[in-house]
Length: 190
Image (cartoon, rainbow, N blue to C red):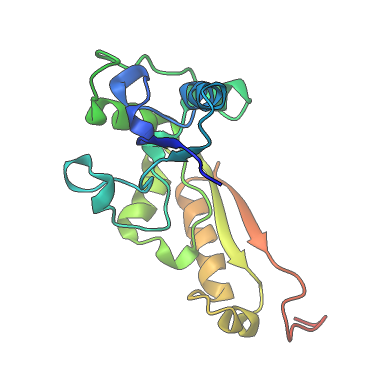
């Protein structure tokens, strides 16, 4: 079966700040494609951009690009409670720095491994008011043997110490965590 489609990066879609997102314009574009009989959209890499904002210079093949997150769509879905920024400039010209600054004010850090929090990140979590006082940690288990079998780099005590340090520095901070029950070889005592 033959199919036809479009090769276009998401950032080429119209958007405030000149950088397209996975928001309303993307949905409208998919609708246009369907009406035109197109069935393939090759979006190109969507990881964080590197030098010159190139999607081909990404530092990660796994991470998504936060610049593609659509803040108005998050707000419509009730996932964002802050006032949305007015992005400056001409929507037909990309202003990566302005868009990045505004999105960083809105987006929050989530699901991080306790061992990945170095001193600069700890200081930011403890003292930066633009970072929400909530941290979701990827603990996985409260048993050191299970953590080792999961190939986690932190111990139970590392996680506890991090939470105690953060709570001492920022008393209003709240924590969430991922825990897995029933990992192979785990017993009721663990």
